[in-house]
Structures are given as structure tokens and as C-alpha cells.
Image (cartoon, rainbow, N blue to C red; front, side, top):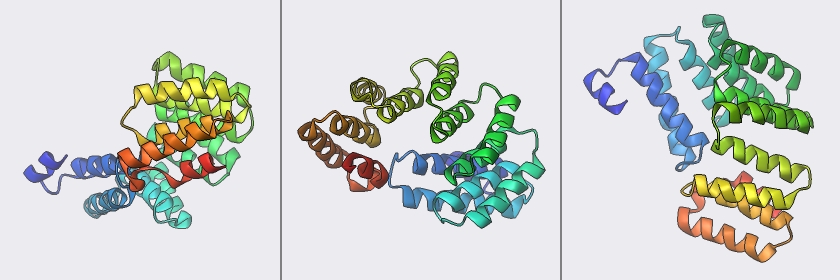
Amino acid sequence: FDAALRESPDHVAALVGMGRAWLNLATGWHGDPRPAADHAAEALRRALDLDAGHATAHALTGAVMHQFEYDWAAARVHFERAIVLAPQQAFVHSAFGFHLLARAELDEAERELLLARRLDPQYLNTRMHMVNLRIAQHRFADAEAELDGMRDLAPDNIAATGLAALIAMLTGEPQRALQLYGRVCELAPSHPNAHACLAAAQGMAGDIVAADATVSGALASFGVERVSPYVLAIVAT
């Protein structure tokens, strides 16, 4: 996207792609999320200045405003504008559904995510959000069924393996969670939160020494700014 924008600084598709890439880096904790989110916001502002009717840019802007500016009212305006502009685009419904889920507006989230899945049954993010919705609803068997759907599309998917580990934690199976989070660390050895999640399972299994050592190793290897404080709070709990 950098290369495209050097060739054509006002190329809207490249600006939206840049915004999406930076947002993925921020939300995935592949680096310090704050500057990555700021870069995403800047690229998306430029895109909307050039094309105010770009649905994906509105949906991504909503994500930035909710997750990093903590302004749900403004974020919702962007999500709803995206849906008006592109009612048949799975991504905009999936993004809105995920953020409704984060707000605990579960019925509305389910409506948007089911629609997104009908529009694009192979979009893995929607599948992942559906698993999280079922977890939020305490429908763990249904969450496992949703995971099976993810695995059909992408065997050994990192997110699916991590969600299976989370379900094991929530249903009181720390040894299974240990096995699954260990597999996540094998699949994503350079991702700090994979190791921190393993530490949470070690703590739940009663191995406090191992949990502390795993956290210390992750902080030493990746730096404090790359390990989610939310995940560290789960470890502490």
C-alpha cells in the first residue's frame, strides 16, 4: 500500500487498504497498538475526504473510533452509514456485529452476524465473531459447533485454536486449555498474547510458578507495549 500511495497519493483503495492493514496491526497486537491505530485513522480520514461514500472506509473508521477513541456514538454512525451504502457487503455487517457484541448488545449483534454469514459463508472473521457471541450467551455447545465450521474452512486456524482454548477455560478444563494454548504458541511463536494466554491456563491449572515465568518471558521478549493489559488481567485473575 505504501508503494501504491507513492505512485498515486490519492488512490482511495490504497488508502483504505493502508487503514485496514494498520488497524489489523493494532488490534492484533503485532506492535504498539496506539501509533498503529493513529496511522489507521489518518489513512481512513484521507480516504473519506476523497470518497465520502466508501462503505469499507466507514466501517473501518467505526472500528477505530470505538476501539481506540472509545466513542461508540460516533462509531455507530459510521457503521450504520456503511450498511446503507453497501447492504450486501458481508464485511460491514460483520464489523458492526462484532462491535455490537463488544457493547453486549447481543440480539442486535446476532442479527448482523447471521446476515454477514449468509452473504459470505466463507468469511472467517464472521465465523470467529459468532463463536464469541455464543460464548457471551453462555451457549458453549453452540460455540463449539461454530468452531467446527471454522475448522472446515481453515484447519489448524490460530484463532479457532485459541477460541477452543478459551472455551476450555470457561468450562473448567484447564489441562485441555494448556494443550490448546500450547498449540497456539507453536502456530504463532512471535505473537506475545499467545504466550500470555498460555500463562493464564497455567495459572488456572495451579502452576503459578510456570505462569509467572511465562509472563516474565513474554514481557522480556516482546516488551510491555506489545502484551495486552487485558490478557495480563486475565492471567492475574
